[in-house]
Amino acid sequence: MTNSDVSADRPVELLGQLVGALSKQRQALAESDWSALNEVIPQLQDVVFSISQYPGGIEGLRAELAGLSEELRSGVNESLEAAAVDRKASAELIKINLQRFYALRSIHAVSASEDTYGQDSLSPRPGLKLSTRV
Image 1 (cartoon, rainbow, N blue to C red):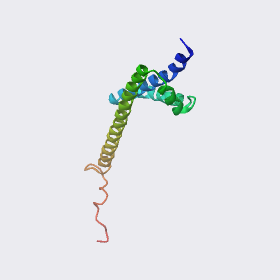
Image 2 (image 1 turned 120 degrees about the horizontal axis):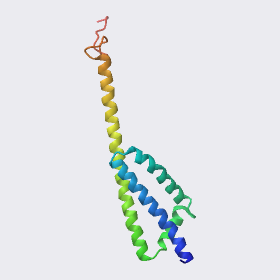
Image 3 (image 1 turned 60 degrees about the vertical axis):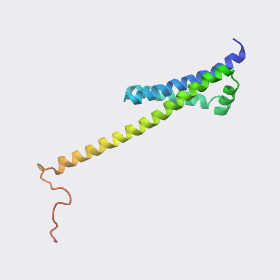
Image 4 (image 1 turned 90 degrees about the horizontal axis):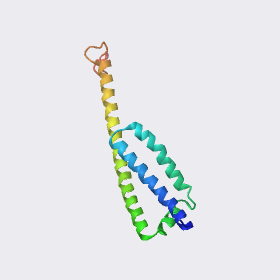
């Protein structure tokens, strides 16, 4: 293994870790597996931090990847396309889960209101009591 092979391995390894973490994140969100999501988020943060600490930052990483052989670069491009799809899917799943959370919160608020102001309670609903000034 030559010195150029070793230098080419690090960017490919970082991208492999990033693609794997994004895939695990999407899968955990799709399955609503919150414990798996809890495990993958620190991995994703570590990979992003490692990429930001790469010599030259993201631009240095891009320059290294541009210097790869054509067949290795095509494999990297396929991995990056898969990662982009996983990232977009994860973003949509997060939006869906937030909407689900807000709906559940609204349902809970309505049921709490029913418990307080329902037919069996002693308190009338706000706005149902006539004013004494009328």
